[in-house]
Amino acid sequence: MHRQTGEENIATWFAVAQNLHVNFYEDNLSPEFVRIYLNQMTLMVSRLERYLTEA
Image (tube, rainbow, N blue to C red):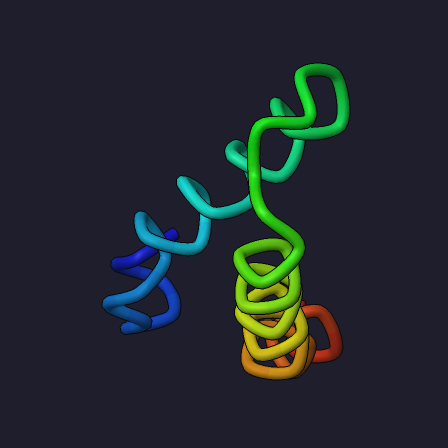
């Protein structure tokens, strides 16, 4: 995906999404980190949304 989009943050966003998924089951993140990670996911969606319309 990095090659197609040029987005350097793809791997970081994937790791953040994975941490949020794990947190759903294990509840190990503080509310502050959940907010930070959710903001990152919002950024990811807004940045990658344009590629859905181009496909």
